[in-house]
Length: 368
Image (tube, rainbow, N blue to C red):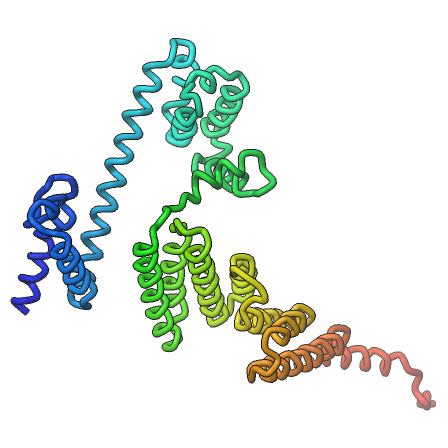
């Protein structure tokens, strides 16, 4: 136990603080290059990676990484705030006067901050645009009069920009879905990391912990969504293929959670990103199952036919065919039962009707 604690302490000393040049040789602090040759650096990097991957050390390393990310985000926000302040002060009096009433609202202030993204760096062009000021004033009135919360306005704007048919969607998508170009050696590391996460998800899935498994699959997908291969041919093929695998895993977890609608959506996305024809056999059989659970038998049969075109001899074909027929037969019986009982009077009402009819009959003898 003492040895593990010492190893963790040594690892933290190695990492140091980013940018301060400290940390015993500085694997992350910037001082490693001065005292080590190329071979020594490679050996040290391998040993350090093995150390980080050990189960007893991984949690501590991940916590340190999360702290570094949060620290980097805070620094980034401060830099953006300073740049925004400078842009406002550099603009003329009219621009400053126009935006002043809206700076008290956090959401509107973030919108005004986007004026700094002008391609020519012309902040005043937007701050003095009458249409822009009119829209900001309308949003401010909605907030001030209690018709709408700032969070709701922001949500509506983001949902509008997510729509591919909306004006400005292309620019919004480029800003939000930024990708990092990675070389082959870094790509292998990223692929290994997402494979590890998917494996952890598979272990949870086998234990029927579907929600936790889905979280692992989502983490793996987020890695694939972040990177872009420098090699546009082979590297990108691997990324798209593994992205499709992640989406298929998420769909399996959704089926386990009985969220069949989301499962179909994820598999539709997996079909879009699959890198080459004829497609993935498992994708179509899995989507066929999801369609069956939703009683969408026509779509299920269509996916089954596609799966047959890929591998007609696979043993799962017969299993899915049986599933479609069995569920279809069960669904028809349930529909007939619902139709039969829909217009059937309850027994109590029917007995009342019988009593009323019998009371209206004339007696056979009048008693005189």
